[in-house]
Image (cartoon, rainbow, N blue to C red; front, side):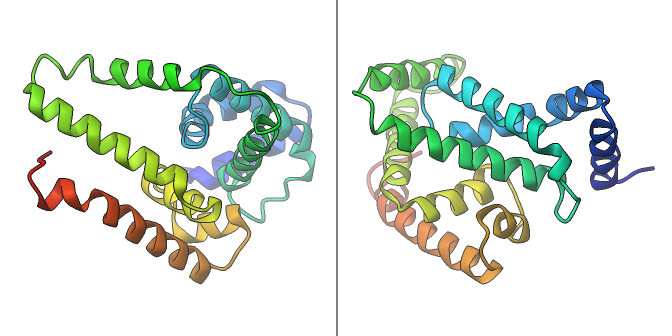
Length: 197
């Protein structure tokens, strides 16, 4: 049986030979991971989907340059992260829109299913904790937020993160440690104080 890396490499080689259906298989395999990754940077769901699509278009156009020196998903994640960062840079040049309202609607939507089983206090505390985590992540420097997000939310190895962020593994470990430290300082009241999860 083929490993995930070798099956991806076989699909990439088919795409490089002109088989567009092979790329569709790669998109199907990684679209939710890419959407989840971009969603850590961008709050607007519609923008996330557009950026994910743009990332796959960029990957398709650049696939002839993929040589298999890293895993395909590491290469694809790097494209997605860079596309999301470019979006954020360009966004700062545009007038603000109504992202906060969309963000609030998203939060309510995620908890609709939980409302039936959780007490109001538990839901309120979880909402507060999620808000603190989200706000703290926004305040972290980009390199710390990216490293922590790739590790904690996407479950990537330190080596894969190092390839995506184009830095040594030791630097990745240091960034994740510093990000966790900052996050822990902000969520400690929820873990030790009167607030409970």
